[in-house]
Image 1 (cartoon, rainbow, N blue to C red):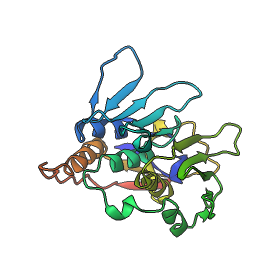
Image 2: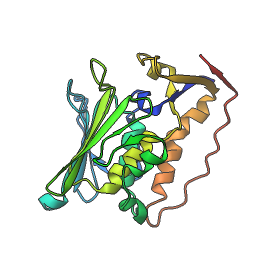
Image 3: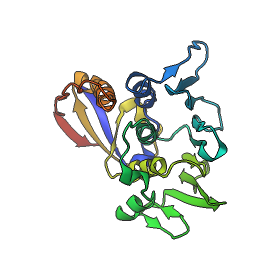
Image 4: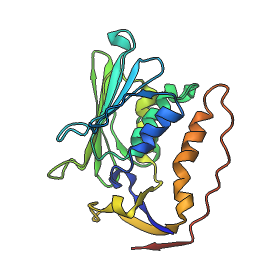
Amino acid sequence: MIDQALVAPRYLAGPGDPAWVTVPLHQASGWSHGHEPLLPRVVLSSPDQKTLLRLDPVPGDQWWRITHNGGSAATSWYASFGARTPVELIAAVTDALTDPSPNERMMADDPLRVLRLRGWETAPDGEFRSPDGVVEGERLTFSGSASWFITAGRKEDVPLWDARFDGRTPTRIVAAFTQALSSPAPLRRTHEQTLGLSRRRLDLQWEQVPAESLASVLPARVARLAARRPGAPPPPSARPSPPTRRHPR
């Protein structure tokens, strides 16, 4: 049995495992990667070579970057995320990006709509704030395009993380991020991944999970995302064993 934490609010859960993003892109969506064994950098490119994901641990800079070359300035865009951005929030972006049949309603959705529905403060000019005041964001409109800047812990000496979407980023991509950002569902972290987290605003609940159940989570995610591709076989049914004990710490 392995101790696992359920961390809420999710935007304070720490970065998690980058494989949650990179492995499905490669195994489920066919993104290719280079091989640089002496560098800590990961670079993945989409099958059509138009989109690039770069994970580059540069101190003081955004670690995650997504760039899309649409063939013209009007159709090209980028997004970036700080080192401590929870990988589940970044995965919401890559999952939306690789969806072969995106939901049409989501494509036209307002990224602020889900925030309002979940009790976040929003303003007509695009500013928003989480109920606890930890996450703040703003939409800056220039020449008909809207860039988004989102920060967790702005009032701290050093912000925890920030996310940026340039003005040409598709609305559905930003909406996927705000939907994941504002979800009330906690994120799962191992004991090691909770080390260094500030406990002032966190709610941590602990449970014991069978090791085989924990090991099946990422393969099940890969199978589910692979099944979205045309002609893909249905993913195998994954029924991990239920937790045997849950307790606060």
